Length: 183
Image (cartoon, rainbow, N blue to C red):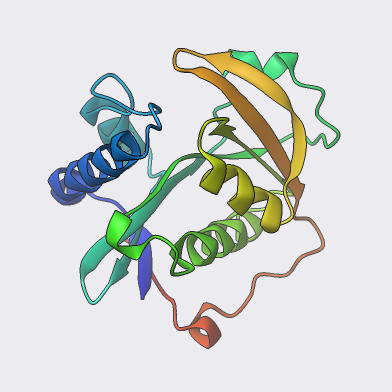
């Protein structure tokens, strides 16, 4: 497995991954994503800002997530327990439905957390759609603290946070993950 930053060349593949995720979520009556969000423009911006991490297995994109510092204005309403000058935020995590239930999301989150540690972050925040029980369960299982709820266009979202300071970055190779660095 490899994790690397997305490039403009990856955009069409990312959009196909998003389409597969949306279709499966719709089949499960989870009306979280659609044509409006996340859209091609948001992924182009993620790529241009160097924030989109792709997780591949044998050159096949199976998951991705965004890691940046962008906190939606709604986050100001949340009673966060952890504070720091620079806080990492995870957005748009998705795993191809064929790989759901196989631990890929947990491995991707672990990789993203370790990348955040290596970049000097001590706290990660994120949110999950309340009507997506798998996402809520994942973040809870991974040790994220429930911090409150916010409302976005599609409804209520649970906010999560986790302290990652004092945690040393794990050896990716030990877990079968290769980090590819862009030139």
